[in-house]
Each structure stands twice: as structure tokens, then as C-alpha cells.
Amino acid sequence: MVGNVMQHAAMPSDDGAQNVVQPNGQVRPEWIRLPKEGGTCPHSGLTRSYLANLLRNRLVKSKVLRRPGAIRGVRLVSYDSLMAYIGNATEGQD
Image (cartoon, rainbow, N blue to C red; front, side):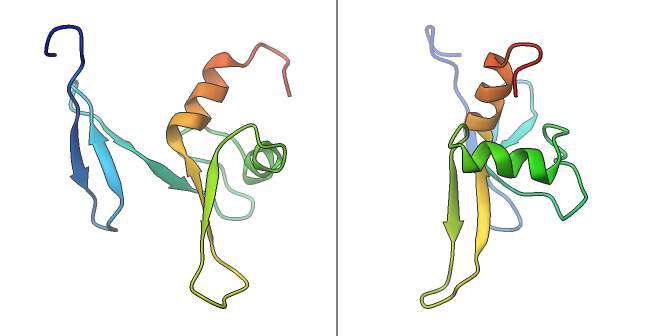
């Protein structure tokens, strides 16, 4: 920590994604993939369908990576946006 500003080190992962190493040594991803059909997110414990609903309603930021001309791509969810949504959610909120 420098002054009141917390310092984080960026570190590329094996798959080329940018991860942030927090002061406690834990690695936090910048973007996460949706879990496979029927699975749950290892970071939040939410199901794929629940996350898809959050994305559909634009409650969490995401991006799609596609090759030029491709119809399908990879949907990436902003880790910070997802954690902010969970942190701000009230009990019983959908």
C-alpha cells in the first residue's frame, strides 16, 4: 500500500488472460467464462442460467469474443462487475 492507494500487480495467466495479484497473494481474474451447461461458476457459485439471466438484463458487464465472420464466440463476464452485483444484492433479490 502506497499512501492510501492499494497496489496490485498484474500477472498474465497460462491462457493469456490478465489476472490481478492482491496484497494477500490471491489471484483475481479480470474476466471469467460462463460455466458449462448444468455447472456452477467456481467464483460465485451461481448457475450458468442465473448468470445468463443477469447478462440478459444487463446487470453484470460482459463481452463476446468472436473471430471475424463467426456466429458463435466466447462470452466473458467481468469478475469485478459480478462481485459488485453480489455485494450489492439484498436478500431475496433476483
